[in-house]
Amino acid sequence: MSAAPKRIVCLSAEAADWLWRLEVWDSVVGVTGYFVMPPGAEARPRVSGFSSANVEQVAQLNPDLVITFSDVQAALSAELIRRGFNVLATNQRTLAETEATLGLLARVVGREAAGQRWLREFRQRLAPVTPAAVRPRVYFEEWNAPLVTGIAWVGELIERAGGEDIFAARHVEPTASGRVVTLQEGRDANPEIILASWCGKSVDRHQILARPDWAAVAAVQHQCVHELPSADVLQPGFRLIYGYERIKQLLEDPACIAAHSP
Image 1 (cartoon, rainbow, N blue to C red):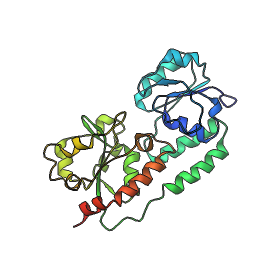
Image 2: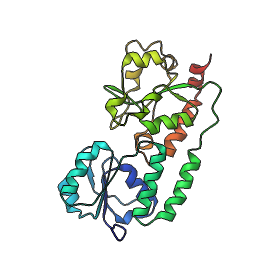
Image 3: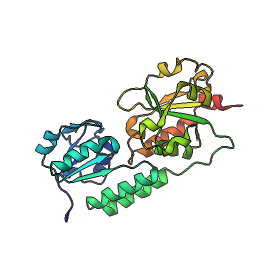
């Protein structure tokens, strides 16, 4: 495209949030239903969930660019391309890839300078803490049936915040199916802190606390089980800074410190 797009449909929430921050909201004509509309922002038609979209409604918006995210939207991206739409599909999995993707989007909409200003803040606010000599063991749960542990960027946030991601070895798995863990694996890893964000639904903390054979798990004994907002931890964009700040707070929670005490 020779000029910045003027009619953009964001089928990923992190892209919509980023374009709002770059002050090109007037060019956004449709968004995913998972986007948390910022205060004062003019509402836009919600044309998709996560894995599916109303393609006819997207077509009616006459976009000159559709932004999608992840392998979950691969089939949707292909369908939109077959329909003749310009599609930018991203698949960031790490914090470095997230930063690069945000920089790319800023260039696409002609807001590279503004994007660099925001990215400086992104880097500064994600600065690692000085970890304690012994780091608390943290289990992050992305889904509960089956249990799915966190994707790479979530593990990176945990470790930057001073925790030890108990399933860090699974960071390399790009899909949720590759990050499935069993109840026994969770029990045997004995996390001292459990953080959860179940994509698309509220976390049932009591269900976690009542899991069979988890009564001896340190995080369960001390009830150090916390929900994180999906918009701040499962959407790989600028809002990860808020998830990071919350993780840092929770790792300093008195109950979690008690669970971590020798």
